[in-house]
Image (cartoon, rainbow, N blue to C red; front, side, top):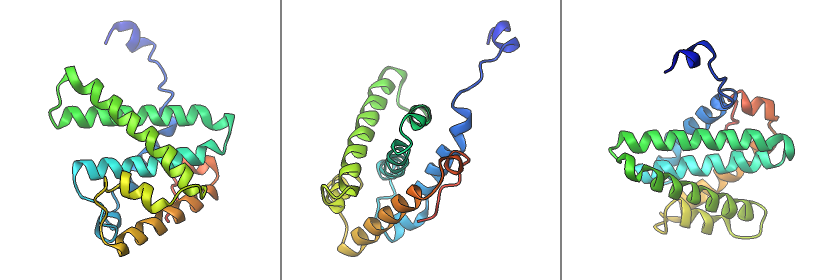
Length: 174
């Protein structure tokens, strides 16, 4: 760290949205998704859950129009930083971290599109969840129904939550 950067630190624009990102991760790690929903408790399963909850939040922020653009971008940057750190922690080398993060970003974008369409009624939510949350290996019907109902409840609760509350990390409980 140079002396100038210590004297004049950049204000991290993402800091106000860290409570929301932390709440996204906390919701994605809630055991009920894994126990009652049959989400695989693996590195991939945990990524898929973070991507699911983050996609729901980003879809919610789309409803803020222009006011939601910068928060969405900064929230996504927090996701990238987190995934970069997670990859490095599990031993992925510097040379390929960028490729992995790029694939994760592509996966997040695909999930946002799939979940947005399903929640708008343009496609079955169970199909989107089967492809993206269980990667084609969906569990028994009760688990699928549980997750589908919980996703719909979280989506509705997010829609009813003011953006300021979300930014403060007050993610509603589905």
